[in-house]
Image (cartoon, rainbow, N blue to C red):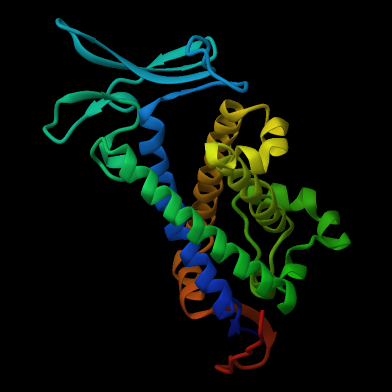
Length: 283
């Protein structure tokens, strides 16, 4: 008679868990402090230098004696009224004030560019050091091999896309392995967005001009590097949003427990009486 047996596997080694939570903290602070820096000049341009007349992205405000503050966001020729959210948002006193991103979404909440830059640069280096140590460990421990798609993964790519769109997730032992979409997402974030955001961040520092001049020219100048940096950061936000959504729909308690303790539980359909044995392996 078929029975459901609960198994527990050691899915996330300690270096994976430490790297995950340090990255989560750093990315949160980098995002909020980055928005503080962006607020100092909420316009993005393409090219080596801006002429302050043709930004491709602007989040700004207008003030009048009769109507007060009104915010707007413009992307190329498209413009929308974003009063209350972007451009003009409630301050500490509840009254609208002119700023690109609201105070509750920036570190620090007040208009303090120097402190925002300090927070941003400090945690940027923490992120780089943490990521470097993790990649060194992952290379020697063989963890990176788990992220390389196999021939079998590619064969199931289409079905994996369909299953995710239908919110159908792997069950049983298959739930303990990375699927093709997870592998591609992690590789893109680590080696694509990660490298891009670090390089463009360095290119925005005038002190790095002599060292990274060829890289700066490759990106099209400092203003282009700033735009790419913003887009890469937006890519991180999108990845995190999808990641959190998948955690919620695939079992948040089990997923969160596995990233804290390392142990992941799944139901295995087997013949025989239900067992309480734990099947442990390094992953």
